[in-house]
Image (cartoon, rainbow, N blue to C red; front, side, top):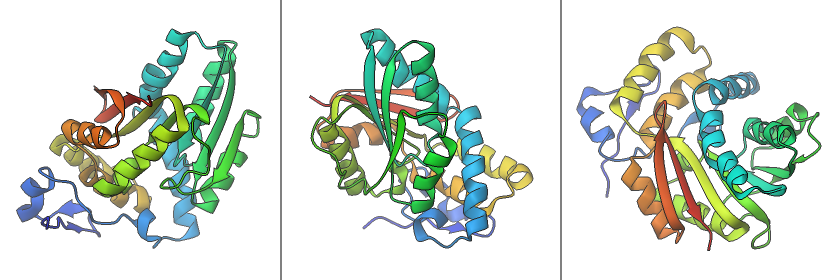
Length: 254
């Protein structure tokens, strides 16, 4: 049985006795988004801030240097992507813009279990007819085998315990014809220190402030994420670190 790492939810700061332990193993403490103990106003504010975070703190850039670079290397004239746990669909719109700019045809879908997020994908993607949304469970993707060229997720896998991460990756592998890409956080003391220090000053949304800190504690060291991908039987596994404190894992489905 793993020792449980506890945080102070009101200040999202680790107890001193738990600090070293926190970076030795993943926390299993649930975030507010996982527990559902938030107001509609907090969730709306969270969606707005997450779009900014994805844009400016590395997720969009990590996507361009991974999935989009892969599409360009393969010189695909058309391609399809499923984003699992797509949030409000910000990364789908990044893909759509790049596809249009390069003259490629894209078929894009965002899967969300949360009804509000599923609506947000459509609301924010009104100018992108190539983007669709699907309500569904990442542990049982509602798609046939090899339904999409690529399956991605971003800042998603850390919400699950290790056995569930493996199950999610297996489902992503099943649905992907070509490759799976996973973008998530690097569990690192400096990332936690910077986030909690800056968060006190600039992050006024409780979900972003407290869940963001806990997300770092729930996230992965590079070797941990690679091991989970191996257990999911992904092939040609590759993991790179991207600024700031992002891990990008890729693996072929066959």
